[in-house]
Image 1 (tube, rainbow, N blue to C red):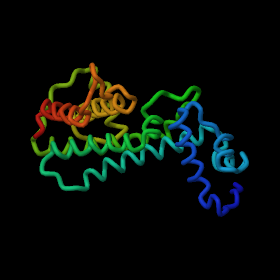
Image 2: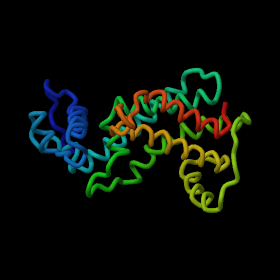
Image 3: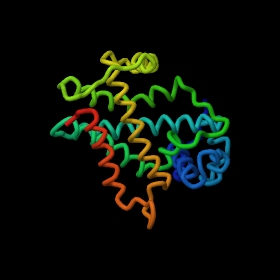
Length: 230
């Protein structure tokens, strides 16, 4: 494949393309992403981009994978610090997810927002990256289970059927209850983060949220209490 020549204006053209793409997504939404518009903003010809990303969908897939990797890294780094107990460890993961989302709203919207019309993610590429964050959450919950600090209930046959493929996909050999609780945590965390990021937890004189930080922490704490993790 012929690569465009590097120049002083864009010594790393591939990174420059992705940065402008994220800017477009933040301003106009992912559906409006345009390779030609990116080329115009960078002051280059369209073929220079096509050498890296022949189609818009190729760029979208790269941005999705990058976003998943970045989110997983944030969650993993939250576990690098010492935590006094398992509740604090899981809380750190929740805060890391929220902080990453608020700092990378375009990327968050790309992977958890409205699907892009006519874009179909190649699961063999995006799925492994998407699993990374879930694996971090499963590990911290499983650590609480191994220490006897986790309340688990009997799973229904329907849940067992749903969770078994997750177990095989993630390579987790522990109780399916751990995956079930990790998914429940994931849904709660992203539900709260999505509502906040898309303006549904904004302060207001009536039915508003003035202290989103406090609300977020109280909801995560309630979840930990239900799980019996202290």
